[in-house]
Length: 238
Length: 99
Image (cartoon, rainbow over all chains, first blue to last red; front, top):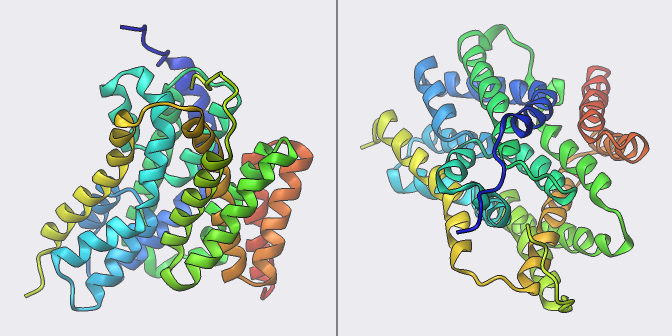
Protein backbone atom coordinates (compact mmCIF):
# COMPACT_ATOMS: atom_id res chain seq x y z
CA UNK A 1 0.00 0.00 0.00
CA UNK A 2 1.50 3.40 -0.96
CA UNK A 3 2.05 5.90 1.88
CA UNK A 4 -0.77 8.36 2.53
CA UNK A 5 -0.45 11.87 1.23
CA UNK A 6 0.14 14.63 3.82
CA UNK A 7 -2.90 15.80 5.77
CA UNK A 8 -1.51 18.18 8.35
CA UNK A 9 -1.86 21.38 10.25
CA UNK A 10 0.32 23.32 7.82
CA UNK A 11 -1.98 22.58 4.88
CA UNK A 12 -5.04 23.19 7.01
CA UNK A 13 -3.69 26.61 7.99
CA UNK A 14 -2.93 27.52 4.38
CA UNK A 15 -6.49 26.64 3.49
CA UNK A 16 -7.84 28.42 6.56
CA UNK A 17 -6.18 31.68 5.51
CA UNK A 18 -7.81 31.51 2.09
CA UNK A 19 -11.14 30.45 3.59
CA UNK A 20 -11.09 33.41 5.99
CA UNK A 21 -10.36 35.78 3.12
CA UNK A 22 -13.42 34.43 1.31
CA UNK A 23 -15.61 34.50 4.42
CA UNK A 24 -17.21 37.94 4.24
CA UNK A 25 -19.18 37.39 1.01
CA UNK A 26 -20.24 33.94 2.25
CA UNK A 27 -21.50 35.57 5.45
CA UNK A 28 -23.60 37.98 3.40
CA UNK A 29 -24.87 35.09 1.26
CA UNK A 30 -25.80 33.26 4.46
CA UNK A 31 -27.71 36.34 5.58
CA UNK A 32 -29.68 36.15 2.35
CA UNK A 33 -30.66 32.54 3.03
CA UNK A 34 -31.55 33.29 6.65
CA UNK A 35 -33.84 36.13 5.57
CA UNK A 36 -35.55 33.98 2.93
CA UNK A 37 -35.90 31.06 5.35
CA UNK A 38 -37.52 33.31 7.97
CA UNK A 39 -39.91 34.68 5.35
CA UNK A 40 -40.83 31.06 4.50
CA UNK A 41 -41.81 30.44 8.11
CA UNK A 42 -38.72 28.54 9.26
CA UNK A 43 -37.47 29.16 12.73
CA UNK A 44 -33.83 30.05 13.26
CA UNK A 45 -33.06 26.52 14.45
CA UNK A 46 -34.52 24.89 11.34
CA UNK A 47 -32.78 27.38 9.06
CA UNK A 48 -29.47 26.61 10.80
CA UNK A 49 -30.13 22.86 10.43
CA UNK A 50 -30.62 23.34 6.67
CA UNK A 51 -27.42 25.35 6.40
CA UNK A 52 -25.44 22.81 8.43
CA UNK A 53 -26.61 19.75 6.52
CA UNK A 54 -27.09 21.03 2.97
CA UNK A 55 -24.37 23.75 2.98
CA UNK A 56 -25.22 25.00 -0.48
CA UNK A 57 -26.79 28.40 -0.96
CA UNK A 58 -28.24 27.77 -4.40
CA UNK A 59 -29.80 24.43 -3.39
CA UNK A 60 -31.17 25.82 -0.11
CA UNK A 61 -32.73 28.87 -1.75
CA UNK A 62 -34.26 26.71 -4.48
CA UNK A 63 -35.61 24.22 -1.93
CA UNK A 64 -37.20 27.04 0.09
CA UNK A 65 -38.84 28.41 -3.05
CA UNK A 66 -40.32 24.94 -3.68
CA UNK A 67 -41.62 24.90 -0.10
CA UNK A 68 -43.17 28.33 -0.58
CA UNK A 69 -44.94 27.17 -3.74
CA UNK A 70 -47.34 25.20 -1.57
CA UNK A 71 -46.80 22.11 -3.74
CA UNK A 72 -43.75 20.71 -2.02
CA UNK A 73 -43.31 16.95 -1.94
CA UNK A 74 -40.30 15.02 -0.75
CA UNK A 75 -39.60 14.03 -4.37
CA UNK A 76 -39.71 17.66 -5.46
CA UNK A 77 -37.29 18.68 -2.70
CA UNK A 78 -34.92 15.81 -3.56
CA UNK A 79 -35.03 16.60 -7.28
CA UNK A 80 -34.45 20.30 -6.65
CA UNK A 81 -31.37 19.72 -4.51
CA UNK A 82 -30.01 17.07 -6.89
CA UNK A 83 -30.41 19.38 -9.88
CA UNK A 84 -28.99 22.44 -8.15
CA UNK A 85 -26.05 20.46 -6.77
CA UNK A 86 -25.33 18.26 -9.79
CA UNK A 87 -22.15 20.28 -10.29
CA UNK A 88 -20.83 18.75 -7.05
CA UNK A 89 -20.57 15.44 -8.92
CA UNK A 90 -17.93 17.10 -11.09
CA UNK A 91 -16.31 18.77 -8.09
CA UNK A 92 -15.93 15.45 -6.27
CA UNK A 93 -14.71 13.68 -9.40
CA UNK A 94 -12.03 16.28 -10.10
CA UNK A 95 -10.82 16.23 -6.49
CA UNK A 96 -10.72 12.44 -6.17
CA UNK A 97 -7.29 11.66 -7.69
CA UNK A 98 -5.66 14.18 -5.32
CA UNK A 99 -7.83 13.97 -2.21
CA UNK A 100 -8.20 10.18 -2.08
CA UNK A 101 -4.49 9.83 -1.40
CA UNK A 102 -5.18 11.13 2.12
CA UNK A 103 -7.34 8.08 2.93
CA UNK A 104 -11.05 7.46 2.76
CA UNK A 105 -12.07 8.87 6.15
CA UNK A 106 -10.17 12.13 5.73
CA UNK A 107 -11.49 12.49 2.20
CA UNK A 108 -15.11 12.01 3.23
CA UNK A 109 -14.83 14.49 6.10
CA UNK A 110 -13.25 17.04 3.75
CA UNK A 111 -16.04 16.57 1.21
CA UNK A 112 -18.61 17.56 3.84
CA UNK A 113 -17.02 21.03 3.79
CA UNK A 114 -16.94 21.27 -0.01
CA UNK A 115 -18.52 24.33 -1.60
CA UNK A 116 -18.21 26.22 -4.85
CA UNK A 117 -15.71 28.80 -3.66
CA UNK A 118 -13.35 26.44 -1.86
CA UNK A 119 -13.49 23.90 -4.69
CA UNK A 120 -12.25 26.64 -7.03
CA UNK A 121 -9.56 27.65 -4.53
CA UNK A 122 -8.46 24.05 -3.99
CA UNK A 123 -8.30 23.19 -7.70
CA UNK A 124 -6.12 26.25 -8.15
CA UNK A 125 -3.61 25.17 -5.51
CA UNK A 126 -3.63 21.57 -6.76
CA UNK A 127 -2.65 22.99 -10.14
CA UNK A 128 0.16 24.87 -8.41
CA UNK A 129 1.42 21.70 -6.67
CA UNK A 130 -0.21 21.74 -3.21
CA UNK A 131 0.59 18.42 -1.51
CA UNK A 132 -1.21 18.75 1.82
CA UNK A 133 -4.74 17.39 1.48
CA UNK A 134 -5.95 19.18 4.63
CA UNK A 135 -6.01 22.35 2.53
CA UNK A 136 -9.58 21.66 1.40
CA UNK A 137 -10.80 21.14 4.97
CA UNK A 138 -8.99 24.31 6.03
CA UNK A 139 -10.81 26.36 3.41
CA UNK A 140 -14.15 24.79 4.25
CA UNK A 141 -14.27 25.19 8.05
CA UNK A 142 -14.40 29.03 8.12
CA UNK A 143 -16.86 29.03 5.25
CA UNK A 144 -19.26 26.71 7.08
CA UNK A 145 -18.89 28.74 10.30
CA UNK A 146 -19.72 32.06 8.61
CA UNK A 147 -22.45 30.39 6.53
CA UNK A 148 -24.11 29.32 9.79
CA UNK A 149 -23.50 32.71 11.44
CA UNK A 150 -25.01 34.48 8.44
CA UNK A 151 -28.01 32.15 8.41
CA UNK A 152 -28.64 32.78 12.10
CA UNK A 153 -28.29 36.54 11.79
CA UNK A 154 -30.53 36.62 8.71
CA UNK A 155 -33.20 34.47 10.32
CA UNK A 156 -33.22 36.48 13.56
CA UNK A 157 -32.49 40.04 12.40
CA UNK A 158 -33.57 39.85 8.76
CA UNK A 159 -36.12 42.64 9.08
CA UNK A 160 -33.52 45.22 10.09
CA UNK A 161 -30.61 44.13 7.86
CA UNK A 162 -29.68 45.67 4.48
CA UNK A 163 -30.51 43.78 1.28
CA UNK A 164 -27.64 41.27 0.74
CA UNK A 165 -27.79 41.93 -3.01
CA UNK A 166 -26.98 45.58 -2.38
CA UNK A 167 -23.73 44.37 -0.79
CA UNK A 168 -22.89 42.30 -3.88
CA UNK A 169 -23.53 38.90 -2.28
CA UNK A 170 -24.92 37.50 -5.53
CA UNK A 171 -21.63 38.25 -7.30
CA UNK A 172 -19.40 36.57 -4.75
CA UNK A 173 -19.07 33.26 -6.58
CA UNK A 174 -18.71 34.71 -10.12
CA UNK A 175 -16.06 37.13 -8.83
CA UNK A 176 -14.07 34.29 -7.27
CA UNK A 177 -14.46 32.24 -10.44
CA UNK A 178 -13.34 35.09 -12.70
CA UNK A 179 -10.33 36.06 -10.62
CA UNK A 180 -9.10 32.51 -10.00
CA UNK A 181 -9.61 31.65 -13.67
CA UNK A 182 -7.51 34.68 -14.62
CA UNK A 183 -4.67 33.45 -12.42
CA UNK A 184 -4.94 29.84 -13.65
CA UNK A 185 -4.77 30.67 -17.36
CA UNK A 186 -1.05 30.40 -17.99
CA UNK A 187 -0.89 29.50 -21.68
CA UNK A 188 -3.03 30.12 -24.77
CA UNK A 189 -4.09 26.45 -24.70
CA UNK A 190 -5.82 27.10 -21.37
CA UNK A 191 -8.21 29.41 -23.17
CA UNK A 192 -9.76 26.45 -25.01
CA UNK A 193 -11.64 25.03 -21.98
CA UNK A 194 -12.45 28.63 -20.97
CA UNK A 195 -14.14 29.29 -24.31
CA UNK A 196 -15.87 25.91 -24.43
CA UNK A 197 -17.08 26.22 -20.84
CA UNK A 198 -18.53 29.68 -21.43
CA UNK A 199 -20.25 28.61 -24.65
CA UNK A 200 -21.73 25.46 -23.14
CA UNK A 201 -22.92 27.27 -20.00
CA UNK A 202 -24.66 29.98 -22.01
CA UNK A 203 -26.20 27.51 -24.47
CA UNK A 204 -27.54 25.11 -21.84
CA UNK A 205 -28.17 27.66 -19.08
CA UNK A 206 -30.49 29.66 -21.32
CA UNK A 207 -33.11 26.91 -21.39
CA UNK A 208 -32.22 24.58 -18.51
CA UNK A 209 -31.14 27.05 -15.82
CA UNK A 210 -27.80 28.10 -14.37
CA UNK A 211 -27.28 24.88 -12.41
CA UNK A 212 -27.31 22.72 -15.52
CA UNK A 213 -25.35 25.40 -17.39
CA UNK A 214 -22.46 24.94 -14.95
CA UNK A 215 -22.64 21.16 -15.27
CA UNK A 216 -22.64 21.48 -19.06
CA UNK A 217 -19.59 23.76 -18.91
CA UNK A 218 -17.61 21.18 -16.97
CA UNK A 219 -18.68 18.23 -19.12
CA UNK A 220 -18.04 20.09 -22.38
CA UNK A 221 -14.65 21.47 -21.30
CA UNK A 222 -13.51 18.18 -19.84
CA UNK A 223 -14.93 16.15 -22.70
CA UNK A 224 -13.19 18.23 -25.34
CA UNK A 225 -9.89 18.00 -23.46
CA UNK A 226 -10.26 14.21 -23.20
CA UNK A 227 -11.14 13.84 -26.87
CA UNK A 228 -8.18 15.89 -28.06
CA UNK A 229 -5.58 14.75 -25.50
CA UNK A 230 -2.32 13.32 -26.79
CA UNK A 231 -0.60 10.57 -24.85
CA UNK A 232 2.73 11.99 -23.68
CA UNK A 233 3.45 8.91 -21.61
CA UNK A 234 3.34 10.70 -18.27
CA UNK A 235 0.40 11.18 -15.92
CA UNK A 236 -0.24 14.11 -13.63
CA UNK A 237 0.32 12.13 -10.49
CA UNK A 238 -2.34 14.19 -8.79
CA UNK B 1 -50.44 16.97 2.34
CA UNK B 2 -47.27 19.03 2.62
CA UNK B 3 -44.45 17.10 4.33
CA UNK B 4 -43.03 18.43 7.58
CA UNK B 5 -40.03 20.77 7.51
CA UNK B 6 -38.01 18.07 9.27
CA UNK B 7 -38.81 15.46 6.62
CA UNK B 8 -37.90 17.93 3.87
CA UNK B 9 -34.68 18.76 5.72
CA UNK B 10 -33.68 15.10 5.87
CA UNK B 11 -34.37 14.59 2.17
CA UNK B 12 -32.52 17.77 1.19
CA UNK B 13 -29.55 16.80 3.36
CA UNK B 14 -29.43 13.28 1.87
CA UNK B 15 -29.57 14.65 -1.68
CA UNK B 16 -26.82 17.18 -0.95
CA UNK B 17 -24.64 14.50 0.60
CA UNK B 18 -25.19 12.19 -2.38
CA UNK B 19 -24.01 14.93 -4.76
CA UNK B 20 -20.92 15.59 -2.64
CA UNK B 21 -19.88 11.93 -2.47
CA UNK B 22 -21.11 10.31 -5.70
CA UNK B 23 -18.65 11.89 -8.14
CA UNK B 24 -15.76 11.20 -5.78
CA UNK B 25 -16.85 7.57 -5.32
CA UNK B 26 -17.46 6.98 -9.04
CA UNK B 27 -13.92 8.03 -9.88
CA UNK B 28 -12.56 5.02 -8.00
CA UNK B 29 -13.90 2.80 -10.76
CA UNK B 30 -12.55 4.82 -13.71
CA UNK B 31 -9.12 3.68 -14.92
CA UNK B 32 -6.55 6.49 -15.07
CA UNK B 33 -5.49 7.50 -18.54
CA UNK B 34 -4.01 10.51 -20.28
CA UNK B 35 -7.50 11.40 -21.52
CA UNK B 36 -8.96 11.33 -18.02
CA UNK B 37 -6.06 13.45 -16.73
CA UNK B 38 -6.64 15.98 -19.50
CA UNK B 39 -10.34 16.14 -18.68
CA UNK B 40 -9.65 16.65 -14.97
CA UNK B 41 -7.22 19.50 -15.73
CA UNK B 42 -9.63 21.24 -18.09
CA UNK B 43 -12.85 20.87 -16.08
CA UNK B 44 -12.11 23.49 -13.37
CA UNK B 45 -11.30 26.19 -15.93
CA UNK B 46 -14.43 25.34 -17.92
CA UNK B 47 -16.62 25.47 -14.80
CA UNK B 48 -15.13 28.80 -13.65
CA UNK B 49 -15.65 30.21 -17.11
CA UNK B 50 -19.22 28.92 -17.17
CA UNK B 51 -20.04 30.51 -13.80
CA UNK B 52 -18.59 33.83 -14.97
CA UNK B 53 -20.35 33.73 -18.34
CA UNK B 54 -23.74 32.98 -16.76
CA UNK B 55 -23.35 35.89 -14.32
CA UNK B 56 -22.41 38.24 -17.15
CA UNK B 57 -25.36 37.08 -19.25
CA UNK B 58 -27.80 37.53 -16.36
CA UNK B 59 -26.40 40.87 -15.23
CA UNK B 60 -25.96 44.33 -16.69
CA UNK B 61 -23.24 46.95 -16.74
CA UNK B 62 -22.71 46.86 -12.96
CA UNK B 63 -22.09 43.12 -12.97
CA UNK B 64 -19.81 43.37 -16.03
CA UNK B 65 -17.75 46.13 -14.40
CA UNK B 66 -17.50 44.17 -11.14
CA UNK B 67 -16.33 40.97 -12.83
CA UNK B 68 -14.06 42.93 -15.15
CA UNK B 69 -12.50 44.57 -12.09
CA UNK B 70 -12.01 41.18 -10.42
CA UNK B 71 -10.32 39.78 -13.53
CA UNK B 72 -8.10 42.83 -14.06
CA UNK B 73 -7.05 42.93 -10.41
CA UNK B 74 -6.24 39.21 -10.49
CA UNK B 75 -4.10 39.58 -13.60
CA UNK B 76 -2.35 42.62 -12.13
CA UNK B 77 -1.80 41.51 -8.53
CA UNK B 78 -1.97 37.67 -8.92
CA UNK B 79 -3.96 37.82 -5.64
CA UNK B 80 -7.18 36.09 -6.69
CA UNK B 81 -9.06 36.30 -3.40
CA UNK B 82 -8.29 39.98 -2.96
CA UNK B 83 -9.26 40.59 -6.58
CA UNK B 84 -12.62 38.86 -6.06
CA UNK B 85 -13.36 40.92 -2.98
CA UNK B 86 -12.42 44.04 -4.95
CA UNK B 87 -14.89 43.04 -7.67
CA UNK B 88 -17.70 42.51 -5.15
CA UNK B 89 -16.86 45.88 -3.55
CA UNK B 90 -17.19 47.58 -6.94
CA UNK B 91 -20.64 46.01 -7.38
CA UNK B 92 -21.72 47.15 -3.92
CA UNK B 93 -20.44 50.67 -4.61
CA UNK B 94 -22.16 50.95 -7.98
CA UNK B 95 -25.41 49.60 -6.57
CA UNK B 96 -25.24 52.13 -3.74
CA UNK B 97 -25.25 54.82 -6.43
CA UNK B 98 -28.14 53.23 -8.27
CA UNK B 99 -26.24 50.85 -10.60
